Image (tube, rainbow, N blue to C red; front, side):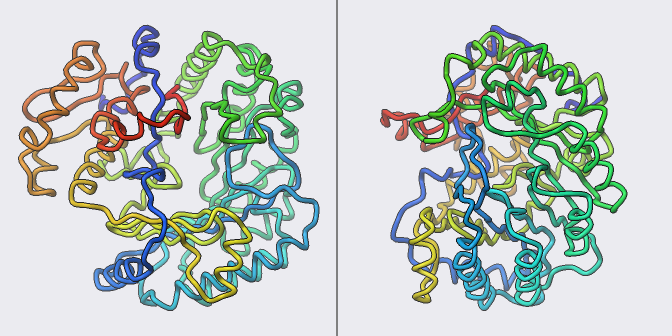
Length: 466
């Protein structure tokens, strides 16, 4: 049996020792490294390079609006009951899509499309249809339904009839933000989902031919216990989604103001939180789900599992992906584009975002040109976090380095992790142990050249690993 399919080994002493705060590595370098005053010409040159290589495209669209506030949320969002606020934003969004599309070769296929938020289904049907029509006019969306075209959904914002409408628009994958079914937990975080309604939506999504269904859950929420979360997970397992995301709630009220409405005294104690995670892993594995890594589980037949078996799994700003070969173009407030060797991020304030586009200016305000060292380390971190192993020869061939010389300091820094059983290390490569897979971020951090600089910051930038 290959490594990714072995049952995870739970080593609580190891977890306590290595449960540090660190990046989630949806990118390397991570967003705190982006610099302001980014030159638009760098973006234009990166797009032109993608045109020459005919790299396929991944498009991300950020819809920041929500009707109600979820107290745990760390997303860039605008909570408002005034739906008229969407109109100037959608106008700016369409303008940005057109401005970017003007630089992109029309022959490059869009293999991935994702609408995130906020709550994308805050938009009404006519607005969603108009936005999708605009995207189709500017970019060559696939007509064979084989692209990964996904949408994040708060279950309370849709009905089976609306799912039918979304399918007709071209979406073929859904991600429902469930978080927890326990009523007391829902009250504590102001997020409400009814079990029967979610079950009805899951059934409808299958009948309508959505090709993949993900359900998001969060452990570590206020008033959550091992008993209550086991019941939630039992219900989720009965629904049998293709994928389950089990996220760690990171209480960081200094960064996210809405979290100040959570009563910290009601959060589970660290020991209880660990037991919730342990129980959940056992439940999911017993039900046949495979631990992909970094909070993600999938059924064995899912494409993520297949990609991990084949060694082609990638990680980007949407999490684990089978489309790592794409240039990611992102639209909307705070969104981040990732081209080969370049990251750019849009304004985080909606007024600044809209003003820039009204003036015909690029929406992005920060960015980063990757150095050769950045790209080498990105390759190393991606392989570790996606495959739980690293072959030195592969990196040497791709990057033109001698691994032992280039990473002499890092290999020495790995020795305590070897002694503690997180990984095996020899002259050919690194293999993460079963006990180390839950702590893969701590291994990747060894290869992060920016963390020493960030350690000087007094305010925490990242959540704990578990």
